[in-house]
Image (cartoon, rainbow, N blue to C red; front, side):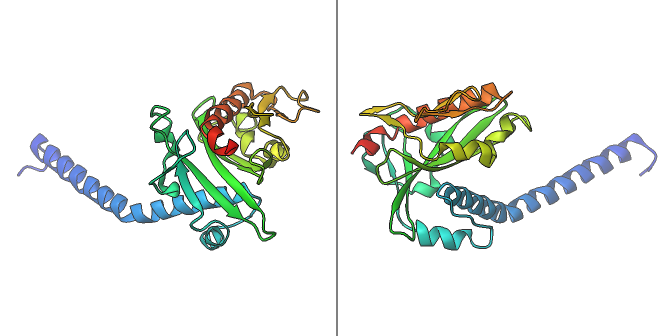
Length: 230
């Protein structure tokens, strides 16, 4: 075959595309278990962080087992337990379902001082993509013990600040109920939350992301209302 001809060039390119595609597919399948494991560990780190337990990739699984273990379950909007594994619930998929079909994971954390904290996952939309987090409540199921948030593509220095301690720490001690009414937590303009037990300061210049956090908390926590009241 004439190596200078178009036929040879076409066949050579086709073979190379097939070979490279096969190699990439093989690598993708080979690495998938590792990627899945890393995602699980990262999730456990975030869950533990919401109750102020620092962990790393090396000890997250051991600490998760120690403080939470099998004390996790899934409820529906009525507060009834469902036959599902809390850790395997994809909240992004659940929120696309109708209210009656959604499952809401609950993680009960037993701290070393004997107290129990209730960790509730939340998920919503920021300016550029999804945002998510975990909010932990004290045994009164009303007062925030800790909170952690993450994002996919918020603007660095602005909306991305939701993952920083400066934004998350003010949630501690806030309450989500006003009597029997779930009011959640308002994310106000910077400097306007002082004295408000149901509000925290938003991010200067990150108004849309701040509103996204507020909407996320309101929407997701409402799904836990019956559980928290009972």
